[in-house]
Structure formats: structure tokens, C-alpha cells
Length: 145
Image (cartoon, rainbow, N blue to C red; front, side, top):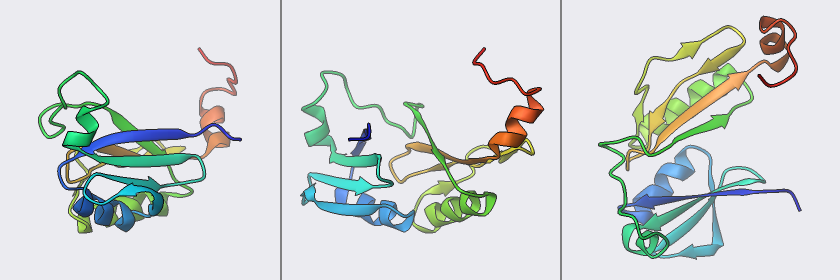
């Protein structure tokens, strides 16, 4: 089985969050969802966002839930297949109630990225990278620094 990542996100309104995540391309997996409590939103074969009501989420951590509108809790970078896909997901997020371009778009030639917040303030950074061009820009470096 491939390694997977399950990103658990506290949300104020599970049903509204489901609509937002569907608008940016996620698919709800009913098998792991409970009305008004939790929703399993599949982004790819290996990435799942678990949208959890604040009460349900609180049962998994002794720490208080961060207000993502007031502080940065995490940056979630999602690779995309093209620059156009970066633009499309960012624009879909804005149309679905999120906030697009919370910082200026980044264009480094070989890498292009934008950003958006979901309705709960969680920050996403969709990006496209031409790996060959990125490696060429780094002088063909293939080892981590």
C-alpha cells in the first residue's frame, strides 16, 4: 500500500466545508464521513483532508484549536500539473468562499505558485514546478543541501 497523508483540519461548519473542498476538486468519501462531525475529502490517491468539527477535533489534541484567521498554523502546498491548474484551483477557491492570493503570486520561471485560504483560514499554496528546469536553474544539483 502506498503511504498516504491524512490532513486533519478543524472546521466551524462541516457541511459548508464539504462544498468548498468539492469546489476545488476533492471528492467526499462517505465511508469515512459523519454528518456535521467529520468528512473525508479525497484529493488524490494518497492525500485526504479530514474535515472535523471543532468539538470532534478537540478530542484528538489537548491543545486549543488555533484560529487560522489570526495566526498561521500550517502551509499546505499542493502540486498541480500546470500553471493553468494553479490558476484554476485558486480561482475555484475564491468562487467557493475562500480568499485568493493572500500573498502575491510567485513566478520563478521553473516554479509558479499562488495561495488561498479556505473559509476557516487554512492556507493552501498550489504550485507547479518544471523539475528539469528547476534542476538546471540550480546548476544541475541533484543532492539535497
